[in-house]
Length: 306
Ligand code: AMP
Image (cartoon, rainbow, N blue to C red; front, side):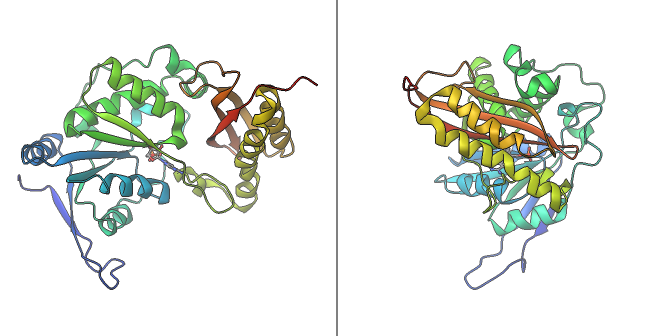
């Protein structure tokens, strides 16, 4: 293996009985990480990638745990706040960053490889080429955040090319992102399997997000209507699509602090909703200037005639 860029021992962090400390190696240079993962693949190990923007929470750690369960594999977690996916008026500069505690948390999960490039190491000095997310990238989130998904697809394509993973894991929390990434690997013939992991929530239903730390207590409790609306919508699934949307809308309307961007019912690939069967209910809203997303699976039955 090549000399690591930097090594951080997780020894002593959260060490309890039976805990085996591990070394986390942090790579900053794409070429060095690529060399390491190539060598690991040559020995027959599977490489599993978990891309993140850091500020890690239990949602990220569930992805890591799923990665670690893959037999005969090594997990690579990338930490990179990707400027390309933030709009000019968005929170790139203030996005939460907690690198040291992120690496400690990954060490406790038994992760050995972290890829955390600087902007120049990843993009070079004059990047010109990007992945266009096409029409589906201008839908839903993409309608409110022009260029966002091209930024996401570009950085993930780069990460997949550098790391060469057999499998890459993403959260269903960012459902449209997951659908677009599956489509990207299919359409661009990238030999990585993309899989989604269910949303991790607080006990009161709030979907975990790095941006939740922007919410004060009042806004955090207002934000609970998002998951409550999805639950109400899912509960109405047996009464058909219109009833689902009406039930969710009613819950959202009761909270003036929540500025709704969209509430949409779609099929699992984000096309128009089916009459019956599996559908996705997706919501995006601003709460006190913080953009929050959530979604849920809905089982639709044909609406009964009144
Ligand atoms: P981010 O750091 O926000 O780019 O997220 C990195 C990965 O973690 C993405 O695949 C997200 O969808 C996933 N993720 C974020 N929050 C959650 C959550 N609450 N449950 C499951 N996955 C999540």
